[in-house]
Image 1 (cartoon, rainbow, N blue to C red):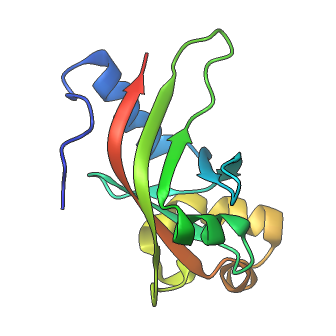
Image 2: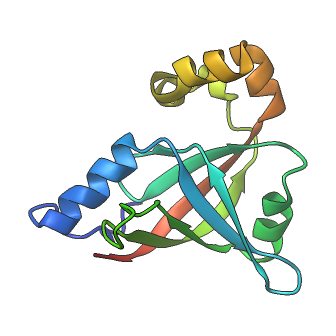
Length: 144
């Protein structure tokens, strides 16, 4: 379901948000621990072109426990080093049970296959290490 939360793509900010969602390799996802402490982590992701982001995780990733208990998350991209190009997304995360491994995800492979091969050497091994899919539905966008 599209919620139309992204800024209008006819604006400079709307175009930048979409370009970064399409092209950035890393997004920071922040969950909250049991005591409420923010827990930011850099992750790879794929944007669905609407209001969703898919992130693959290790089975033992603490963020999965956090999301099960407190599904509200924030996501952000690194700025430009000058205090600009800020994009912060808020959303609702859920674990996607039974989602195909990333080796069966053509969009993820198109974006990351080369990097995974270079860093891990083997796509299948990487897919086995990061088998748990988490979807974040974007509910709010802000930035400048």
